[in-house]
Image (cartoon, rainbow, N blue to C red; front, side, top):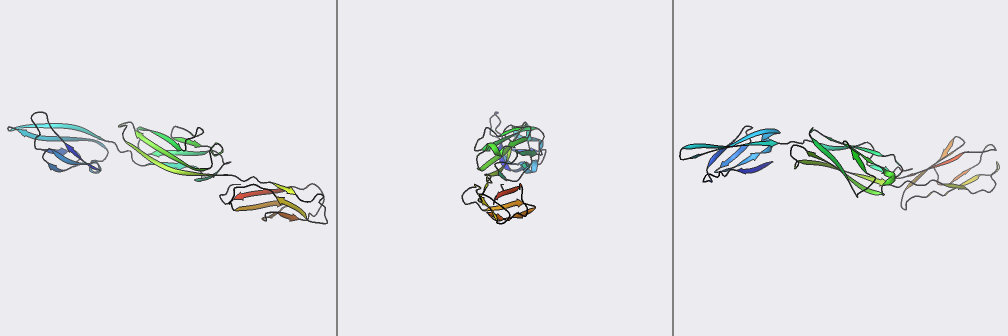
Amino acid sequence: NTFTISCNPTDGGPHTGVFTSKKNAISLNTGNSAQYSIEDAGSGIDTVRFKYTINSTDYEVVKRVVIDSIGDVSMTITDNLYSCKEDSPIQIYGTQGHSSGTGTFAISPTSSAFSYAAGIAFFKPAFEAEGKHTITYTYTSNINNTCTKSDTKDIWLFPNPVANFSLANSCPNLVKEVQFENKSTFPTGTTMTWEWGFEGQTATTKDLKYMFTSAGSKLVTLKATTDKSCS
């Protein structure tokens, strides 16, 4: 937050002089240089003067200094940082305390499905590859295009399982258990949980055996959920 400033007038310098700052941001005056503290100056406009003397004549060099304070820059993600391929698009908001500048988003790895406008970005899980995606929001001041500040967050994208089952009995009836065989597909190494639904009841076993209490058409459901909460 502190840097060295110097003044070398063209009238036979260098000259020994004294720096002053309207915001009292000067320290360590030595010859024709001094230390300038951005922290002491704060944001806004400062006037810096270098006064020196040649042959009993006083001279002064005056410079206008603009301190551009962007302030805090951050991103807000509307959903969990851990998402599933079949999730709805995720909105990402860029925010900053500064009022005169431009915000841009970037994603790594690059993606043609990622888009942004007016400080809002859209991450579409269905069109992105599984794995880590790094989102960066960068705000650049219009006062000085070299003043920027960024915030970065990672979104992890995981696959959804495909729930499926088959009827093991060729002719189910009321005198024996009906067997349902779980044929769901899911990523290797994933810990799964199961939720069967039938006749107002539930079960959490991988496969299901059940003796129905009445004849007729029966609705049986299976929900498969990964250890990343993708179902």
